[in-house]
Image (cartoon, rainbow, N blue to C red; front, side):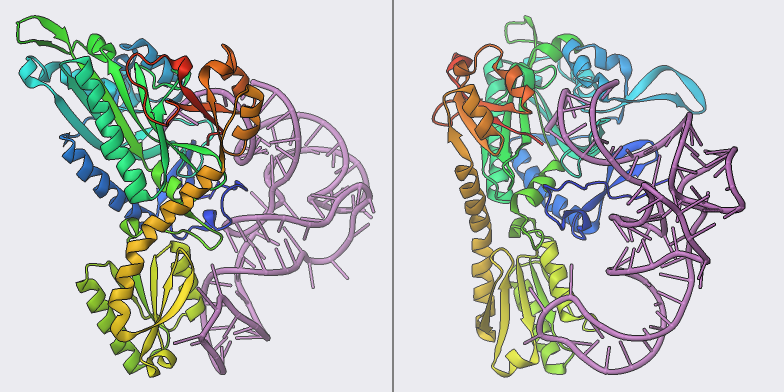
Length: 470
RNA sequence: CGGGCUGUGGCGCAGUUUGGUUAGCGCGCUGCGUUCGGGACGCAGAGGUCCCCGGUUCAAAUCCGGGCAGCCCGACCA
């Protein structure tokens, strides 16, 4: 069955990436290529990320629900663009209960179709709107070229689906999610700066009228789409018959949105913050934030370590005691470093004789002796600055690799190693095709000052952010 | 579906050009000992239908023919 082969061998990835102890591996599961096994450490990161996003989603008013994994094939074809967009990457089930099915069912690649088939029943009156639903689920897309975390054939995500009475309300909600859920999570939690903007028709979600996106830049200058929020117009409402009586008693089609972010974010975290020594985690996403290492088995050392663990836990940190003294100190510290634990407290007899311990912060790899009495304050200080410092570092990389250009030729050159900003109108009618020939794409469109387009802004006046995507 | 390339212990590879004893190396694994303040070391050991089928030959991982599988670059994509 599972061969368990690690198939990511990309040179661009950090050396340690495929042995990530800390993360996951891709597995060939029979004929299913590029599925993913997430080990406990990586899954712990996902759980924290999930909690952060879930809180924001609920603050935005959406509620969690669950819809079926298997979708009748005919549902997909109800929305023309949608089916065209997803057909090539569908996994289709043709047998069930030992019999050939009358109608094949597909494993959801996304749930617009099933969700909306229920929305059609749930929505009758304008009083039923807005309907704001979120689902945490797994989806399957038969990818031609999987890449660990960034594009796996099966992934975990949240997908939001909403229905509104007016276009303006739907748009406002799509933007609320973009800013208050996604942008906020990327910047404040993951610690990666992202550009926001909308997609060109070519890059737009199949079935959407507008796709808003958060585009991040990884350490190597390549772009990664980290989350998207779509305005669906009335496309799905028409296809699935989602109608409501407005306050005048007139029947109208609902205006909808959908939005999602996935385990790809773990990949973004790895690619965005990792260094040659392994993963670097912002404290908010570290399953263990502080590890207290007993360097040598010794009564006093152990007692001091256990006291520190208790105190640091009382301060609200996620703390773990590493007293596996039968394993060499070097091996243990390297192991925690690979996993990206933000702070290590190393307790040994030599320091203890001086009344100190050694604190090491992972992101800067700086070590310093700290008196026992000052450990709590110092740990709190480090925990407070790791996130902002990681963000600042990533932002500096992004700034350094982003340039304003005037011609397509310049965009091709700059886009190969970062972001090239160019007025869309300057690319010409076949600009996107010519970029595609050079493995480049327009990541997003935004106003010259970086803000989002307003209704009525012509695309030609927008700045196109050109880059190489994963 | 185009363009490159590769199949050899669990993983990564050498050996193939020029056929020749018992197919090597690193990592990992098992045991014992010394170590343990930054991925330890020594000794002993386990583990292989050299992708498959056929051919040439005294002799094939190596040469010839035919299959099969996989990887990388592109098209698709959260």
